[in-house]
Length: 149
Image (cartoon, rainbow, N blue to C red):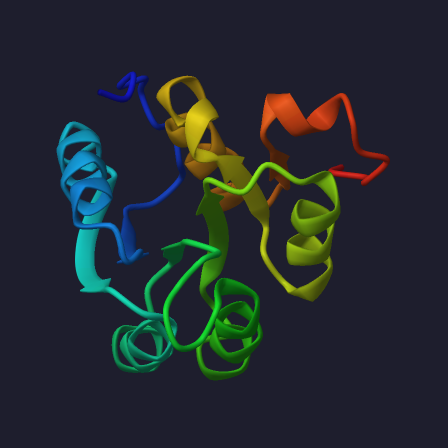
């Protein structure tokens, strides 16, 4: 289970979760239910569905997996940035690669959390990106030259 640290954001945030792994949806639901500032308003299980949900819901935050069927997380990020300009995108993926994380930030994601770091970092990452800053998992910070400021 993920650690449930307090989320400190300026306003309530509506969240769209896009991930093809159903147990991850359940874990995120439990964690976000403990955060009154965050409310899951939609779920998608592939990249195209995520883009469609972002267009329809216009969430403040999209938690987006990289390895999605059909339309991968990188292309979904590009498209979500076009159809839901007010949405902040936080990539949450099993992929542990500084190059991929840097690419995600370059195309419009505000942060990147490796799922193995999510126990300690998901809520701090959400707080950080919703407050307008970038976030990169601690396991990647040591190996990347990417600026997260």
